[in-house]
Length: 164
Image (cartoon, rainbow, N blue to C red; front, side, top):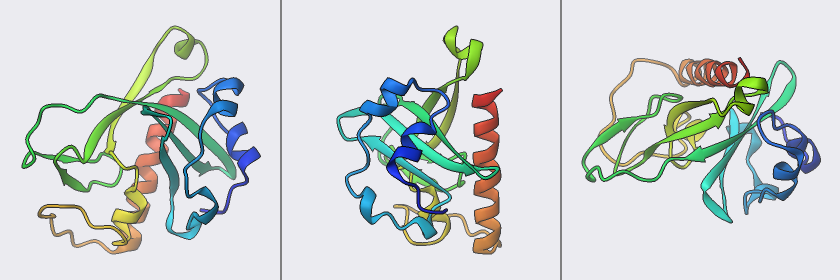
């Protein structure tokens, strides 16, 4: 992913008002972001943990999504869940449901799309092996490049659902 300037990032949100984007808190380490390791930038709003943001490049444009984070469930530490973006298996609440309001008239009617995603939004780091998930992992006979391609396809599908 190429570096994104703050004003471009704030203007990129397709399912948030300009006011929401202007008031959003950027990640604390935004200036030190390792852009080359990312397929998308995702973070929880430091001022509102139930809110998250995701920004990706799509067809040469920067596209941002405002996300709502479902409250943590009562599943035990050993219960496993799989992220639908990077297909990383996580335990102990490491995967959570995040919903995005749809764009256009559907979004104004309150329609949204949900996706089970790594709670820390670090999918890019998991597929590259830069971050390890707690618990046993499935051994996949895929190259890192193939895992990155799969992550990008799953991300595109999610963006398509929100924009449909």
